[in-house]
Image (cartoon, rainbow over all chains, first blue to last red; front, side):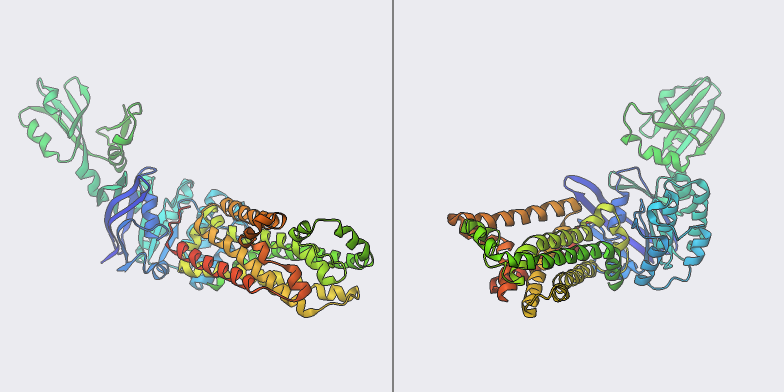
Length: 310
Length: 267
């Protein structure tokens, strides 16, 4: 059963098509990563999911209910963490927690969360560091044990130690059945936590796949060593890019189906051939190559699967 | 809904108490000064007779205002300082209710809770309304014990009428503020537009009294319908005052709530 189902979501701000026909669905118990650079439409999509913004077109269904009409009911099932946690300056952590409890009911896990995240709830929000503000935002999102968590860059600006703690908290929640939708810039975080990812570019979904398949299907780094002479132009195509010429071979980036290259290689005796799947970071950057200016470097694949600049 | 209502009351209690204390302080000062003014009322009346009639009308001076405490307070307190305080308090409250929260980004924590936008609007509106009622009660009726201290005779029913008129005036201004706060995402705009509107209304009322050919523009001003002298000295409120203030409050509250439930909110 789809817990979140987005169909042809469109949201425009004047002439800007912030979200332009986005569709995806998320199953119960999934951790879904939503990737994209600034301005791609991630936050707008999340705000539509939360009914902060009204879709221009399309439908959002959460737990089988309409996100606009049944917003009040759905909010009781959703825990939300904003990209930049902004709360009341003069309130302490306790004040915020009491306020949420007054609306949502007494929390059974808030003390445990405070302890796990090593948070001091007696301090006023304006005196908290960025990391502690994020901790408080997370406590408020999780304390009512929601069925669904929607988070906009949950670990942005946090140190690796705290990131690790948050990953553990999220993994434990997911094990208990919580469905998690999270946007992120942090690809290692997405690789660690998410089972599936959607990549959004210019308001459109450009990839929507199982995280393991994404790299495998989409990009390969290929290093070829030929026995004899070879013509590098035979390997150039729309999907194959010659990254580097070696004395006896080539390093190529292959997008899409690898069989096209394998067919061409059949006519050449080979000394050695190495094919490596792209990492998520490389796939991500490949999707965004177009949006990078000409003067900026584009990332190419190496056989070690590490991005390097040219 | 009620946690949001009580929380906003709790958050604003300090500033609210300051407003009330400032108002009581002013009330005490004017009541304390009244016996001295009354003893000089004949001279004051002579002095005021020198002013043009239109000027007296424009600034709500009643030539007999120094003879009774009701007339004195309606001219000194309720025509100048009280409207200023209620405008500052109402617009300040309304500006931060939604526009200020959107500007600061704190609205997201409210919008992500299982409370509909309509309930959110109503809870905030009621919190302001509650504050206004308490402010009106504490800014009119403390006059009674203070007048007793100074052994000044007064008519209780006139003060009740004044409180009602004050509430209606405050309600209309507060509703303008809440309407603007519901449609804008920047509290500065709420303060600027509502403040500007009230300044224009004040000027309209004065100009209409000073220039006979422009007499009709007074109907476009709240300050024409807010007549403390009539309420406090003569125990009267015009039917038009009821109509204008209540209609403004109801219409703007309804439109504001509908707009707020349908609008995009991005922080």
